[in-house]
Image (cartoon, rainbow, N blue to C red; front, side, top):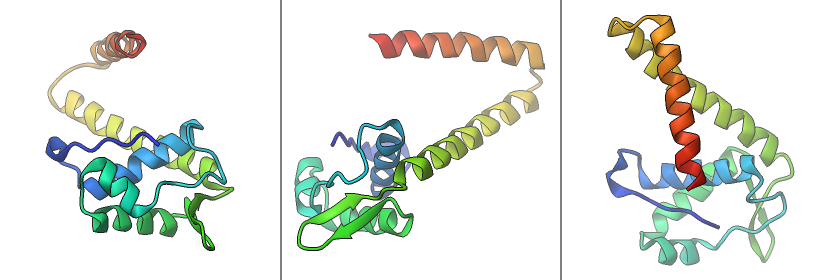
Length: 130
């Protein structure tokens, strides 16, 4: 499981873990029934406190993404993908809305904002291909 934390990005580390795992599930990179690394294993891999990973895993269980498997660990629930896809869409829409409100509030007009969005989407796609 590929999880990366960035101490300087403004998000709590446990929240970064939660979001990245949800995005991985939404994308199909982590599938229903798959076991996630143990708290100790992921904490060691990320060089963070195990309590931080435990907090993220508790949140993911509360959100219905992970469930305990007796004697084995935590696995992704059957309904997790659909839930994570909906949550990913909701999060991205909210972030886009904030950017658009800022752009409108700064005096930019709709057509100019739309052009900027198309340009930046093209830039992001090019960067992703590299």
